Length: 73
Image 1 (cartoon, rainbow, N blue to C red):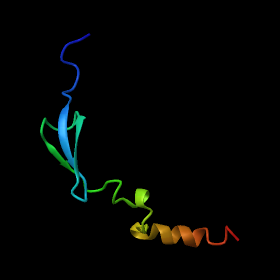
Image 2 (image 1 turned 180 degrees about the vertical axis):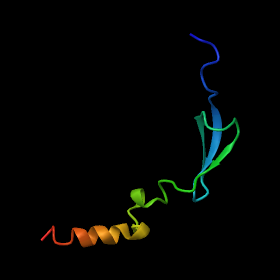
Image 3 (image 1 turned 135 degrees about the vertical axis):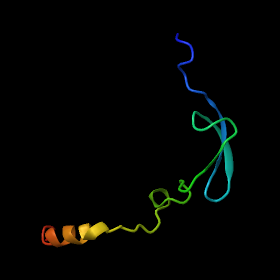
């Protein structure tokens, strides 16, 4: 096996959006770093089933709805 081809595998601390912390092993960052999550399974609507907002960039959703309005009738 070739030497020095594998990434450094070390422990980091992960901080969830609610402040809870856990330690995991990863190749991200350096040993002892802290990863602060902005979105996690405790806060993201895909996991929580919360209110989903549809971001209408440039009216694309409105154009789609107008174009296919009579299709489901």
